[in-house]
Image (tube, rainbow, N blue to C red; front, top):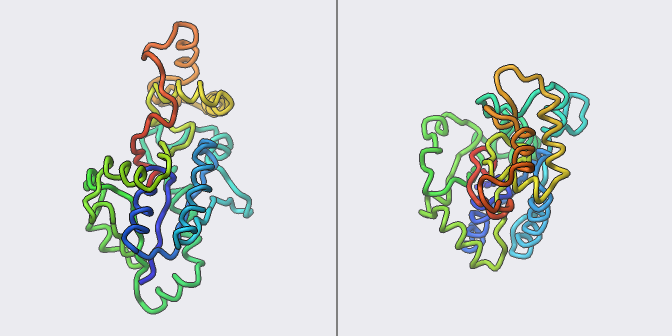
Length: 261
């Protein structure tokens, strides 16, 4: 059985791979799709965790990125600037993950010799997905059965490990918690997370506001969908924090549906 796993850089996928080590479950390929928009701490964690995996007999994490028609790397940030739009989630769609995470990983596996050998024999590659036992509604059995290339498995659900269980697995491994993994300009960010970004990474906040100001806005007001990040941050800076002491990004450790596969 050939098994691959998608590493999102967050709690679920980290715990899933640690537990694979604990249970002696073999994984042949681990992919991290880099949108170009993660926080520096996330990138450092991915590198650290890759080294940890290798030291425990697992393959290193392979980074993949979206490329344009010329073969040049295209980040989600640059794509938004090019088309003068916000990330698709601001408009109620979830194309960001599809275009900048799923497609690059699928492209890599499509050209990966071990996977091609499996498919040539008419078999499926097993793909681990990091949904935990507290979110079974994310599993789509009917859709999975129709997939001729991949046999989807959800180890955390199979092992009955929920979000708190994932945190405990990471703690017991001796590793630090990875924190939330998502683009620094993601429209799904909560207001306290926006203020945490402004506090922790003012340079990234400026880049996020540049995306917002560059976009041709017709149906939404800004990265907050029904409000502008620029106006929100400006108000907080001038009027004081309405939400009390703002948490830094690593304290907002909640799952992001579009990122931590």
